[in-house]
Image 1 (tube, helix red, strand yellow):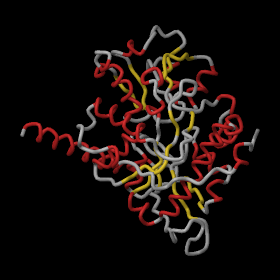
Image 2 (cartoon, rainbow, N blue to C red; image 1 turned 90 degrees about the vertical axis):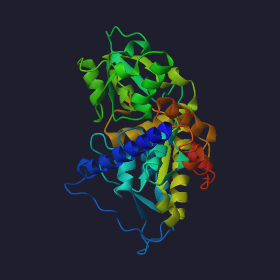
Image 3 (cartoon, rainbow, N blue to C red; image 1 turned 45 degrees about the horizontal axis):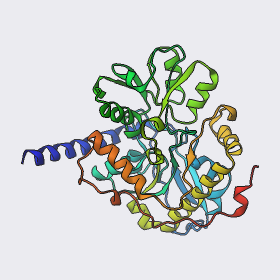
Image 4 (cartoon, rainbow, N blue to C red; image 1 turned 30 degrees about the vertical axis):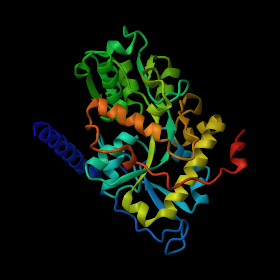
Length: 357
């Protein structure tokens, strides 16, 4: 009975935390002074709205090197009858999952399977329909950067230190907590400081305001090229698995049911983008740099998953990490509940592999 009550308390806390954060979403969206309202959608046929116009798909303005940027700039979405509308950035501590629940965006273009599981446990019905990037030794998911003259030598030295996170999540503070816990060290001794503006953490570490960053692309690469920081470790050093970086692209179950052809078109376009990036990285960096207003030479990138379908083993990796962290108990939700392989993308045209070379 005691275990059941504790489990119910954890679930109630998760739901309360998720929906309290929803109140921040509207004030956090920076695209306009007032909250953007969901745009009216047409038929479920891509490129065939009621007015015969492209289907408008609302996404968060991208702040990292992403397959969304490339799929948009190279016309892959347009080929599927989809027009991307960037609604602005989110406020501090706000996630795309909360924005999706409010109808501010139509699709989640960042995050991981564990985030989807947390959202579903909180009552938000959302499903991963496509992969994004994976972790890689040469193009890691996360770079842990320190000041060039920092005395820190390994991740073991993070005990009692200040670490930046863009938000609290499995891949930000979660990876570090997972690492320290498995090392028999105290993860609660680390002070996590939220810094969600692009480049903010990398600047803060050089100023001594924090000890370590949890840098995502492209800003880890930018900071390293500037020469004031050095690489302490990467996410690959913790897990040595592509699955640990596996990111998710997801829609609400309601949207999937109402607009399956749009979802299929989105999956097709994103698959083309992933293949293109891996085969034409320099060209892709030019396109992303133009969008992000950064020098392409400074950009770090991820390795994108070229599998057409979602690998169940990668989902299970995330469940193992999340359950080790105590985000939920084993059995609260199953890996099969967070993803679908219903939308297998079309073959990529041969020409895509040579554009930009």
